Image (cartoon, one colour):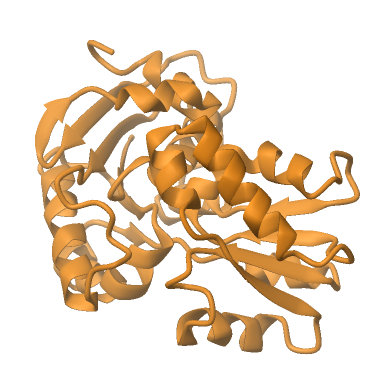
Length: 260
């Protein structure tokens, strides 16, 4: 089994690592867009064009499923990606985990990029899945970029800024950008709730599980074989960015990434 993942940068690491934990034997193709990042400031058409390009590169390796490991790309490019590749290649998008977060009753904070915060898309998710729940939208300027560069000081600064905008009553936080899952424990610590009182909801685990369901595959976390990782940088084979080593998910993938 081979699963491809696409994103502009390291936001795809959590979903790729989640697939690796569920199916250690799966081969992975991770397709980055270093020449085009970040996608967020681009127009909807521009995002779709970049996402299609990195997806086309990954598709040449004949994966059995394609994960769009980016909330922004899912919003702007998922219809185009599905029109291009399905039904032959199942395409799985990434949606902020508002629904499971709201199921706990709240209060909930949704941490997201400034472009996503207050957007019709995010407001629609909240209206559909969190009606009647106390939800605070928290913009996190600079956090995704800091995570992409593994800039420790910038990460701490951005997390502290967002934590200052998060009401103390909040019991659940939605990590509304896939990059944020790489620094989840820093977020927990910044919110001064290092124990189980604060629940963090990311999307990586659910997306990985959905990919397996689309393929009618079952999790096999104790599989003896270890799959490979093929890294594509704007369509050319390469190695994981050095900054990936700063994160546990990156180090997990690096074990089977050639020449890393």
